[in-house]
View 1 (cartoon, rainbow, N blue to C red):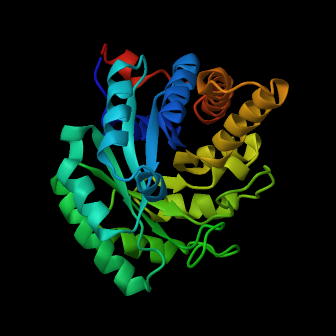
View 2 (view 1 turned 90 degrees about the horizontal axis):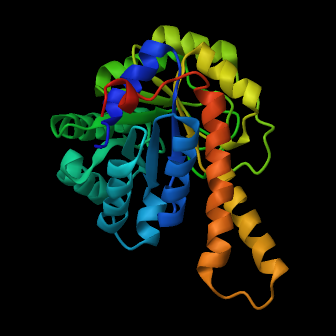
View 3 (view 1 turned 180 degrees about the vertical axis):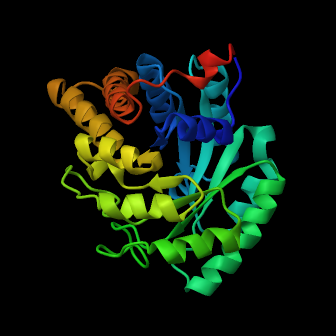
Length: 292
């Protein structure tokens, strides 16, 4: 079994008019739970490593290596994606490691910069990353739930989006259409008409961030409207932490991390499988279809 390139997974999603479920990894148990849930659903996925997660672990290489080994052994297609990378040194390291380390893609996030600077920074990084064999995502607009450009209520303009992808040469675009990062409830409202207009204007796959807060029916509708990559993070943390808290509350003497980590991992896997069934309910794995 070998890992599948992000570009291959995205291309298959575009052909099938579905989306690639993309899940944030905090540590090894997260990565294990994501792969387990994806295998149960029979759906290909991305393991996403954020700049914050890399910083938490003190560096990129150990976490990438762990994810690479899990991807290589998985029964479904799995690729590794660096998400929301703002630090130029981390962008450089990601490009240097590239597919040889199992990395399939990177999101260059210069969205907090003025438009012209966003274009310049993104275009330079995209040119170098694509030359190294990476699929490149960028962001235009402001996806809620974070500081700076990530302000609630801001939306991506279709005409500006078309100009942005033409100027930067990116492969995919994260758009602001109503979702918000770090939502603990699923009450977000997606502007489906805007998604359709963006899909018509932009000749690149669209990405929905902050999908933990989006109800199942709107996730499915967003995919039908043109979203081709769906990012999920907070919902996995909630599933994990809830199960761990329950285990610890049930046994005051419990100290072995394996005994409370196992139900956390299982709860996370169940959440992943559920999201996969919504995002790609009838999609066969690329890995299975090409006989890997």
